[in-house]
Length: 356
Image 1 (cartoon, helix red, strand yellow):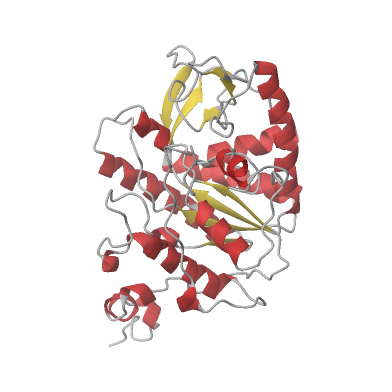
Image 2: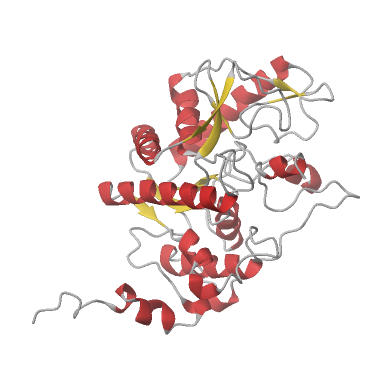
């Protein structure tokens, strides 16, 4: 009898790749398509989990591309205004649709019907990155001017990155009925006001997500022919769902859709790869130990495991940090006395703040 599994490699079999391996030693990366040298310009964007990779790249001496650095600001101001959180100050880009529309803004001159939202205190915010200025803007014109400066910085990220890391976070979104613009947060959560005549909820399907991600990748390749892209799926569960179903079911849906879409382009393009941060953190073998007590925030132990796998497989030519020594310090929580923002910025958490 011929058994097609008789020649299976160890990593293809659960017993040999997971069950017999200590949980902190499981490494699901098999054949990375490219590696980062110390000189490789690395750009990042996406959901909040992408910040862990960005921080580690910078910490171990790699060329993390930052086009909005805030070097002339104090440390406190840089942190609260989100300089260096990502390569540019675009805030959280949770969906492929947000990435795609940002590329359209940068290179096609796309404009939006809503350019500024007002907060209860009278200040204004950018609807597409509503929390990058804690004190807000003094006028809608100031918002527009600041966004023009930001778009120039974003263009540099897309044009100059040699490797672009994009972390997919959500499928649920809020859109403008007027022009289809996608927001990172629903109108009214931190600014503006929800108007059912102008705004709508939309949960992207597998087909939509796959199509839009492909369009974004093609746009990126068009402006930067030599770019390589590393996709990841955030392991962080949704903080809220607008669907009339349990948050666990909505989380599973979102992550499954995003994982399928990512795989589509790993198989289609040789310049796209997938880093399994989602699988590392959520693996059943970890017994949930990679999450904090809220079962949502990823613990330093989980971050350290993911970063060990990343460094082991995707870096070369550096003064290599011993894999076992890679640790991620416990994220700082907001200090009521100083107003300091947490080390990991997540726009989505604002939903929880208004619905406790």
